[in-house]
Length: 306
Image (cartoon, rainbow, N blue to C red; front, side, top):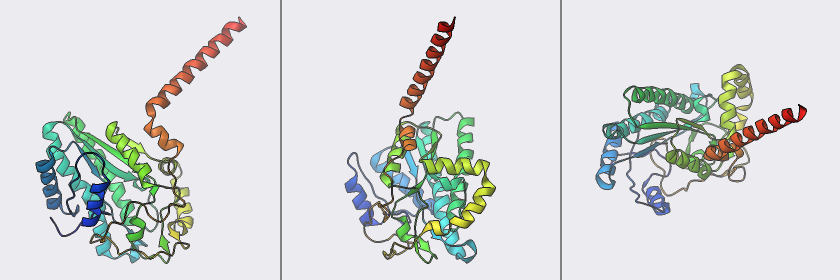
């Protein structure tokens, strides 16, 4: 169904494996270059033809180009933008064309802490994630204007121990790595599943994401200097000597590479902030209980003083 599939693990062996790992429901793997609107539209049509109406659509395709902007090949930069940004645009269009007439459905955009703060060596990725945020906000306002019941969520992720750092196209002298703190991909996937079950407009996953977003709002000039000093070494792992996989920038990598990368020795399984995002009801109830208890204690203290 198309010449390319830039998404990690979505060559034919990867799709078959993903289908085997799914425990409930049906899995349908369709090779699709998400940068090509016609291919995305055809994939959506096939899904609805074989599996029924789409009620949840998750945009998460990405490819990576590591290196300084001026030394990055213009074609590579454009390709990364086509996948990382226009892939989301094409997916959102295909989903809305089906959801809006039914006045039902939910789209989840997988964003990033880097949708709020650019870092060195990843200009194409950071720019695309920023663009996704603006695009999603525009679409959301249009849906609200038209009183549509279709929901759109953005889930901004921290650094994850995915296979992407083994097949990005890199100019770096050492093995590329995500900026710590690093989380296991399954941890973040559970957060997305929670948003699917309990739709909300925006979710920041992990303490580093929260600190990045808020820090850029209040101390952006400081972050410019800090990242200029630390952003180069912080995205390289000299101790990792495993050979890189072929890049998936233009073609899928053969075989099933799994979901985890080579940084499991550093990756966290969870955090208090991630627990909170998935248990907001309990957290709100606890906070309300503490507030009521505090008021009662204050009232009792004042009464005792009379």
